[in-house]
Image (cartoon, rainbow, N blue to C red; front, side, top):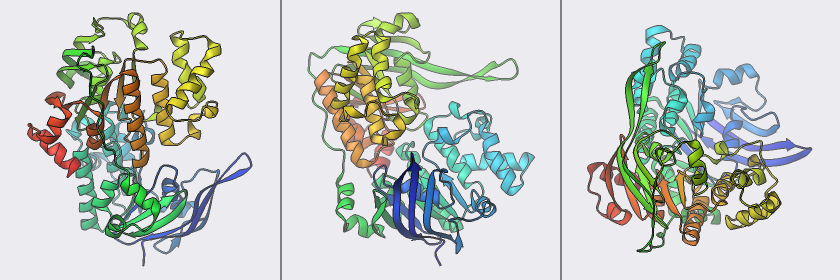
Length: 526
């Protein structure tokens, strides 16, 4: 008998008197100890299907059909039955840990809550179990991290905490919704190995939702392909990859980020450079908040970016990539020289920095988190124009419309809100917001990590086109080394705040010198 069986599942969302179909007549099953991967583009119904298994859908959703867990019906089941199964028998790892973790509670408290409720652990046994779980998922120095809050961890570390929480009660079925999105390639490999070990030792079943087909190939026994709410193909993993039957599956497999950036002009001016840049965060303890040590996020980083050039920055989570980017943008404090357009900006105050802000912009990893849900697309993109008094207010709509066309969006959508767009469309909005001021230098912090493969290709092509058209300098941070290779002229490899290797992207990919770089490339490219 299957552990979980989904039969004819349909989910509709009711809004403003209309029914919007998210899932239509989906059917598949998961056996004991089996890994089933669900793949498809954003908006295909993958996550909605997963949430429907234990009735975690919002009130506006209506689910029909059948979801059987060990023969017990989940659709319309009493709340007591669902609470017994949720988090205990069936556990979830969600895509975005920052919205799943409570920002007001320490890591120890959040992990301890589940263990106390379901296993009755208290005191020293509870703390020992928490430390054990953190060690399992690769959190460095777990004892020191117990009192940390989510915002004090890197994106990858937060995701590992989420995985630890999901595994805490030793569930029978783990539903992982994009669990490796925020992880670097080496940690991704470790997490996948951890999940495989748990399957072997405890007979754990896994429903794995992802857009990363490379991960699917490594971990899945069977694959379910979804498109626009429907299951278009299902079968053993080898069959899906070697002989896909549906045209949509073939399109997903063929989507690959390829090509190379346009060459940089020999006389291209230098936009930004740093000399021995250092970012150390104080560790404070006690009532008086005395400094007892430092987190050395960046040590002695020297780099430069020219017009029309992309500097790729790679490394594991917590290596200092984002701290380096925020420091050069003067968004966090740092030591030593940062030169932008020939001017040392590290000593400038907020008022002195303001005129330079229009020339240096940033696109963040999570567009949904960086776009205000209360502002329309028009308001989001035009905000920079108002702050920097670019054009009159009457010309703002025209400027926004032109920018939307440039990033491949319909100008007629400018009065909509972020939640009405797909993940790829939201990232285009974030890019439009950064580009409307015609900056010279742009930080791209994991701009493609949360996107499916087909949209990822489109965003990379868009970034290439904008760079060539406006001679933009990019500082490009990514865990996806295939994207880094396609977009970068030069690369930095970082670990524990240090730059271990620096050179042209071609040289580093073809002949890496440092053992760490060699391991990183082996994990990413096989």
